[in-house]
Length: 226
Image (cartoon, one colour):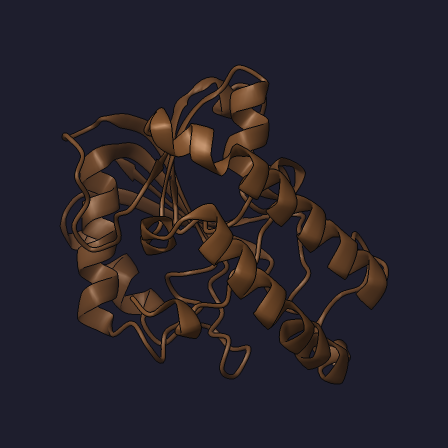
């Protein structure tokens, strides 16, 4: 991974609750966060007594390198969001300014927790479709803003292999969102993943969520081993 090609963008525990419909009971489970990047989900949940491991290839870099990249890319991302404001639902986040504050607050909290979290194995440099975990090591795996979103960069085979791997290491897998970022339409890989799961005996469903920021992102994919 080249850090210069990474767009770090962090989300909070509250956002994870909403986009994955997480209950208090869910948050008591042993959780794997896949592609968490600079989200403060891990930091907040750990502080509240939760058990979570986050994986992302960005964790091969140190805190100052990640901070430098955030400072570099932040104004570019905000400019793009401003130019495409119509593609978002300004409800839970009311304005461009509010979005910037929420994201930077989340990323700063992540950075403040990062070194300690790495020392305790809560942030691990790993990526799909091969994970360094035992079968059923986690009760719940959450994949946020990676699979399906970047369908132009991650092909169909990689999607299927990645989902199989997530189902190997976790009893339940939730993925959000299911639209491709390139055209804001359903990922062309979604039906193939569902068909693969159905044929292999995995219980898979599309479940509505209350969270919607990118327009149309109103469902998550849920897969459970039978």
